[in-house]
Image (cartoon, rainbow, N blue to C red; front, side, top):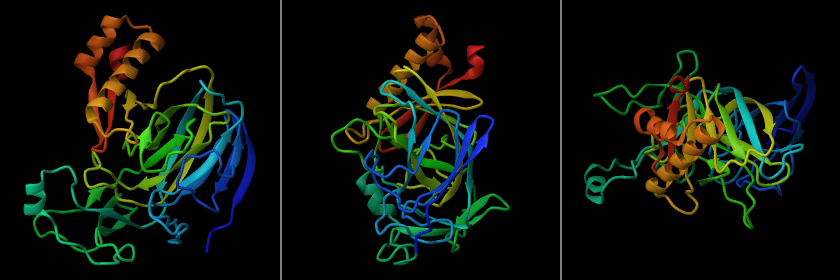
Length: 328
């Protein structure tokens, strides 16, 4: 049974607050999906996401297929191509006590994979017919997640949680809308651990109205998403939208209390980490020179000696981070 569409709007000092729950969740960043709410700059949204298999906070499945079902789209009034959609993530929190993860590292040589491959897990432990997923227990009181069964006598596999959104993006201006699998200049399935509560995400608008989506909640994900997933779960999400006119972004950016972050990745076309690195560096140079007013030599030296790099996903997404304290 699907939970019913719930849509209300309450006046606030900064705009309206919209409470939205999708009746149907979608697998593409497409303008063709029914709009869940029309937002103005300054409006807030209170919503929930389902996990990558479509299960919601109550364990009800909303889709028949796996693959990052999305919450949205949200139409942004006044958004035009060339603008930037600014998303302030005010709340990204766990809302249930279960999750699951894949468990085989993909980026290893064949001989290592053959020598150290773990055996299949219990068939149907998470999804019917699947032996590649391990169920997790999430303890929201202690802020930890662990496998449902004890899997090691040598190490603790209880991990501190850090909830984040794998998917965040807008509909791109393409003939065929991308699925919620890859990432690109529009955002998409970036699977970046910094897309969490307190972060601000900046996305280039390609279509009138932007058509904004979120989804693919994780209780935790390590650098690179080495096993091909995070600890997949559903989330409570609250965000505020802001529109920056004529920003002409070339790709996603993030900002948090410590860093300016440029994200490079076009995993629909290429999974090259070198290409992603070059894309991230190019955007950071532009950001520092054109918007922060640094001399080109200063921008290059900051990247050369102060930057930190996150391997966001081994599938071809890299982020470059400049400490804000270096700009003071």
